Image (cartoon, rainbow, N blue to C red; front, top):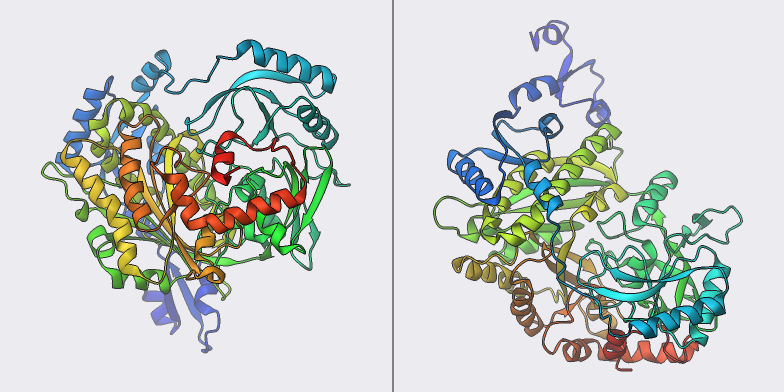
Length: 631
């Protein structure tokens, strides 16, 4: 029946999965009549998971028992909140037997007993801060309002009592900054608080939220094309990476590389020297051509890349020059990419220099994720038996059919469900570390077989960059280091194996300080002074390519800082330097180590800061930045 009609009519038959007609016949050099046979229904009938069991544990021990039983029975486990079976298995392409574990009772117990805070603000100067608040509000007038609050960042590494304000106009911001200067207050800004390092306000000083800032653009927009020919786009402070993603897709202008998160503020990404992925891609900071900043005198200053040396400090300035009002980035015309999900044995990749070199050098963009314990069995665990997940992205030059909105709708549901599960499980894992291997095994099974199965999608670049939604639902710890690649892939393996060996060492002691993932990417170098990517800059003897590698665990993970010190110490010995927006300040000797590798760039930054005259009294510097910059 499948081939009968096409054969009898003497037509060519092509088997396809979904509507891929154009992909097949594009550039074909024959004149046959073709019958396209869509085998999607046959494929879906062949691969479909079956829910064979439901569990609803009421405590962590019951959860451990049901996970262990599923492991022994070789069944996939999916953690859910309530009955979400259909949402999970709809369109799934696997034939596993699935145990659905409803964590609703566990979640409800968490709500009844909120976790204790592990960080506390310094409240020793309560009377002093109230006096400062009164004087500042009196000097400002009625608007914007100021108040005392305890600020906590997303990653729960900072808790600070501050005076805070949320101005909405340029004039309010200028008035607020000038008043703070006259009152002798130090000023820092916060976007969504997704930095881990102590780069926010000091205790009892002024913290400004910029999320609601209005633009001074004539059309009232917060993001606009200012020069289509040059691909230049103006972006206000407060605009998120998600806002930018929508703008890029609509206007077919793309940022060459960016962070995965879609909820952080774009100006913050630039100001802290954050990065994306791509063999020859630079950081978002390197694509900025203009920035407007309100200095300590309340005046709006404009900086452009015409002054190259000054702009190398401005483009990733960590807020040291003042409050960033907006910036102009240079984007590139629309890029379509081929995105592949692959899985390899850890032993075949992390212990094979030739394979990992070939993987990186033969592809434009490679992201590698290792989720420890994913090969867990009832017997001994060996990390070499784990799988690693690889996202391979290459630019596509041919006309192809990109992923449909239906795919993105499906993906959004799956992203939400998995991040919801992590949010529920995070405090349980933190309080019951022995659950870590079982949880990691179960969550990786769903990731590999349902969320990101092996296969290919064609996507617009912003979709491929911001491929994961709802990350903000589950705060994490994050330490990241950057290395000049040097073309030495044997050294690259040593860097990776530091983490593999530590995980193995700790697991033998029944300790699990790394309970989410190791993630690594290779990028081009940077030309911005405070971005770690500058150590790979050929102008300073670098190789032109950077390795960024990070470790992530849920907040409150037992032994996290000790694990980071163990890993960080060995990474520093291999000439790595920390990403300055992530966790690093507790590493012994880290400031001297950073200065050893970035000293000339820190000195150049300090020189340009002084030359600018934007902050003669250092009101935009907190204690941590003063120490880092040696001021």
